[in-house]
Every structure is written in structure tokens, then in C-alpha cells.
Length: 18
Figure 1: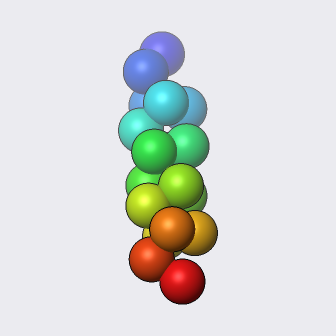
Figure 2: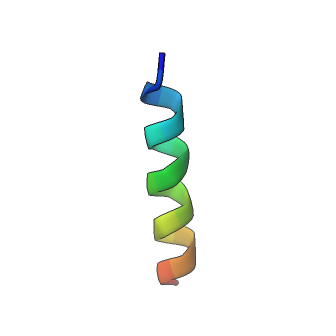
């Protein structure tokens, strides 16, 4: 399941957007 990888990438993007 690559869904977890997608969630991680989205989380990282949100964190870096801070």
C-alpha cells in the first residue's frame, strides 16, 4: 500500500509550509 507514503509526503509538505 503506497497510501501511507502519500500521507507522509502530504504531512511533510504541510509542515514545511509552516
